[in-house]
Length: 64
Image (cartoon, rainbow, N blue to C red; front, side, top):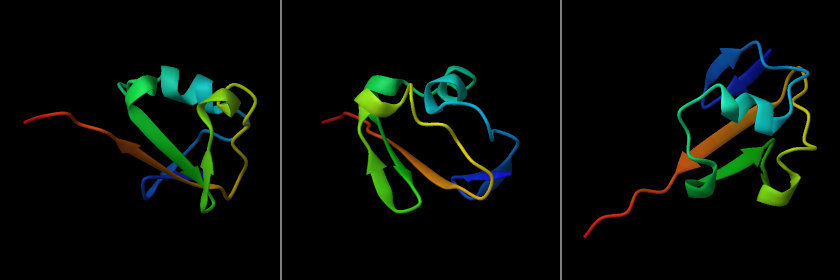
């Protein structure tokens, strides 16, 4: 199981890109942290989610 934003998810074995394609997140407007480390956007496609990972996804919202 992978914990994503505090929720246990069956995402182990997926790349971060593959997981994000199953969500409504806009990859251009998010930051992702894996086990306390920020993942650069250039690494999303090669970052494989592993059992026990803790992922935090933060969306940036514009406004005025």
